[in-house]
Length: 108
Image (cartoon, rainbow, N blue to C red):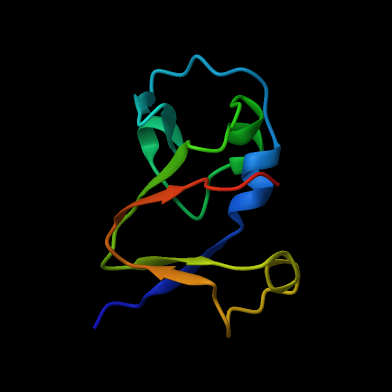
């Protein structure tokens, strides 16, 4: 069985960072914008997501789209404290489809 790495994320941190975006990887959906995390390369454990997020403006109603190899990875949503301490024992949500859209449904 393939080794599965857990990719930990904190959605609200990414939603707080950014300036106006005109990125081609974004599309309007339900009045919001879908931001493909990592742009054309998708999500990877090697990405510079602080830099990626600094080029975006996030709003309630937008969504983050994570594209990754589900055979090797999954995605966990953690609260801020658990993220900072690298504690994945109690995730708020777990995603494993390899094509996961996470709505930004509340302000930071």
